[in-house]
Amino acid sequence: MKKSFSLFLALRYLKPKRTFVSVITLISILGVTLGITVLIVVMSVMRGFELKLQEKVIGFEAHITVENGGLLDNWRQIAKELENVPGVVGVAPYTHGPALAQFKNHRLVPMIQGIDPGKESKITEIKKYLVASSTEDKDGNPELDLDGDNCVVGADFAQALELSVGDTLHLTSGGNVDQIIDQLSEAEKNGEKDPKFFENIKQMVLPMDLKVTGIFSSGRYAYDSNVVLVPLHIGQEIYELGPSTVHGLAVKTSDPFTVNVTKQAIMAKIGPPNLASTWMEKNKDLFDAIRMERSVMFFILMFIVLVAAFGIMNTQITVTVQKTREIGILKALGAQTHQIIGIFLAQGMVIGFFGTLTGLALGMTLIRFRNETRDFLSDVLGIPVFPKSVYEFSEIPAAVASSDVAIICVSAFVICSLAALIPAYFAARLDPVKALRSE
Image (cartoon, rainbow, N blue to C red):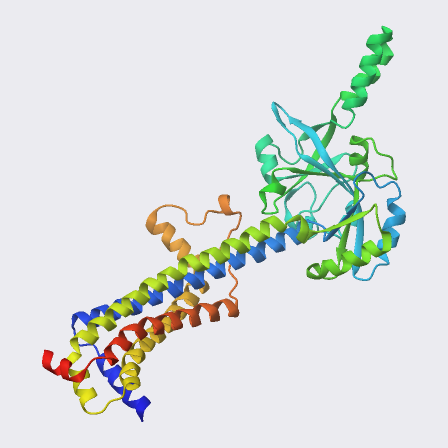
């Protein structure tokens, strides 16, 4: 009965009467609605970004890479040992290093990654990211063609060098610079004049011609602008490695999110000086930055709810001033302090409840129609909102986490309730005699 009494008066005070207080109440509810809507949309979009980025990294990078700080001379033996480790699905060799790339008058220094196409297909999903290729499968989809002296380049790299499928890319390795300098120094000391000697040095610095047979777009600028894929034997030739020598081994696991367990099993199998690194460790700074930004954005945007809470407090203070006489009468009739507090606390809770409910509904609606909203705003404002050329996503990614939504809604409701508690407490402490006398 006490609860019903407080709630009855709270709802009666909240009835629209076209007064200034009613307007402030609606503004307070609107403030809570907007705060929760923005929080849900921003947190969901940022979580979607993180998951999409994880998907791209896992699809283009190996789950685990095994190196020893130098060269793996016995990679075939190590690969056989890794294939017997529980959780390992596939193993593929690779070479990796910089080289000078030239086409027409354009020059860049990308990372040249030598791979075995047959083994690499079990590790990554490079074929999935091909946007152009010289060959296609029976369904018309681009095929990975890395036979002979072919190469596949990133979309941004191709744009920077104005490359197209079928063009010839010239690669010059810097791996033998020390050897060339040593031979030239020796020739200078000995007064070398044999034409064959200088012809051999010339062959060492001549570029290697590779035909561009494909262009990929992973959605990450670091890959698309700085990676050239070549056959493994080309990578070994560029860095003057033998057929049994590579820079490392790429490993795919059955579960990319439990790679630490597989990594420990790998290290127990092969041991130092070999070193295993996971995709999480290599991209730790990137994902830590995203999580930190999401946390910071949560606290920053929560200030919108705090502003709305101050609006609720302002409303309650105004109501307590206007209802001084009624409070005095209630106190004179025997109303208890907790009942008076309950009236104004219930008002804040009702405002917080409806603000939270409408904010949740509006936030989920905007998440559902986020791309349509983006297109509408682009048409109205006349500028591209969320352009693909900048963010590398054709659609706005989003992932709604029930835990995030629950924290947002509960936090907003609690803040709104606490905002009403302070004026409710001072209203309950009014002396009924002084309250009636003031009228």
